[in-house]
Amino acid sequence: MTSTNGIEARRLDDLARLRRIRDRIDREYARPLNIEALARGEHMSAGHLSREFRRAYGESPYGYLMTRRIERAMALLARGDLNVTDVCFAVGCSSLGTFSTRFTELVGMPPSVYRRRAASAAAGLPSCLAKQVTRPVRNREAPAGAPHLA
Image 1 (cartoon, helix red, strand yellow):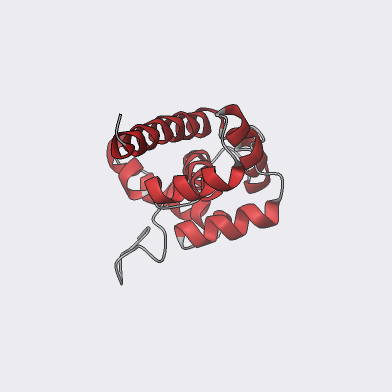
Image 2: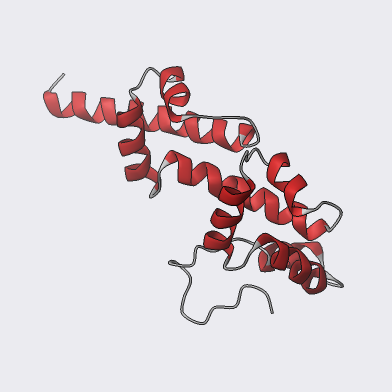
């Protein structure tokens, strides 16, 4: 095997490991997860995991985890039957302040405002449209003037 083939094989192996880690984050977003444990489970160092995950998916493993948590929080808040604190803990966050800050960064408004607006915006909309309207968009990635919720 040439060194190029060896490098390619290692890269493919790393991508498979990263996919397993991403799938685990998707499944277990509400559980306490840390980079060291995720990396150890795939026989990687935490630093290598963080670098390669960012390279493959465009954000850190922690950023990806928080995005999944915020997506789920948006769905729970839109239902309207849970308060912000209950939603925070239901999605695996242990700090209401960190949850609210991250939610605001990703969605463009605090969770309490989102809860009120989502309930009124989703009223009467088919669920497939309501899901599209309430999907998180990172502020820095959203086009200028893009509405989150009317």
